[in-house]
Amino acid sequence: MTVEMFLAALIGGAIGVAELAARYRDKPVAALLSPGGLLFVFVNASASIVALIAVTASGWTFGLPATTPQESLTAVRVLAAGIGSAAVLRMSFAPAQSRAVGTGPVALLNGILRIADGELERKRALSRLSHNDLSGLSFERDHAALAELCCHLMREFDLAEAQRLGGLAAELSHRDDLTDLDKLDCWGLELTRLVGERALRQAARRLRDRPRDEPGPAAPDERPAAPAAEPEHAAETVPAPRPPIAKASRLAGGTNGRTERKSFSDA
Image 1 (cartoon, rainbow, N blue to C red):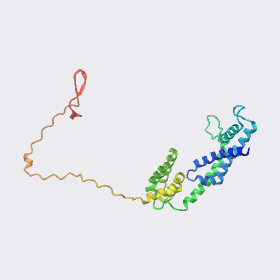
Image 2 (image 1 turned 120 degrees about the vertical axis):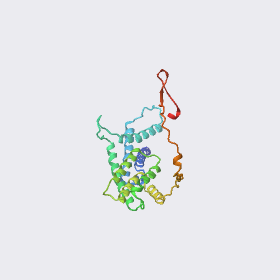
Image 3 (image 1 turned 90 degrees about the vertical axis):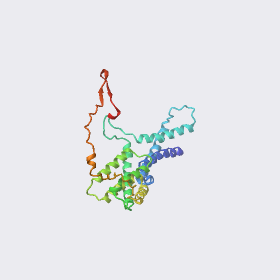
Image 4 (image 1 turned 60 degrees about the vertical axis):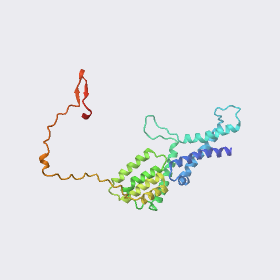
């Protein structure tokens, strides 16, 4: 029974680790080793063990025939306990046609994740403010290019994240109570959550080393040459302009009430 409990706890803990890694993409190891992360994994593993004990004590066979080997039945129970406990922990109950936040076992996991969020946010802020990776840059000039570089570093970028970045950029641009460096620090903290400190440092270095004013190709001089001066007696030899000839309409009446184009020059 000890081996079965260990395997069930391993499945439940692996699900918790995968959820933490997906939630904290910039620092998954730090999130896992934090007290909140360890508690999150422990709760998932413990739920798997409790589910395995309940399934075994109840004698559930999950519809398998009586001739099923004991090893196969044990493997099915371990898988059911590991995966089923994760599903039960993430259940939420809410009244029908209600926008209120549901209650249930998921509230326990959400509370633990909020604890981990607070710890990771404090560590991220201290690490980001301890050194200035964005020195030499300007928010007004470089925030768009910096965001584009960081976003293209990611294989898949969520649309909600892009909208949130756009809203933050617009808000910081209209803030008059913050200096350009303050806005740059806020922008860098937001990008750190998405791509991590090392990627942000490399993107800032790329922008810092890039020449700002690149000379473009010289535009060809297309000004027309000044007309040559004509003799004074040329005005006497110029014939008088002819009266304008009335131009025919684009469409002229045709036979049987149809219209037809008179010439291509009328188009």
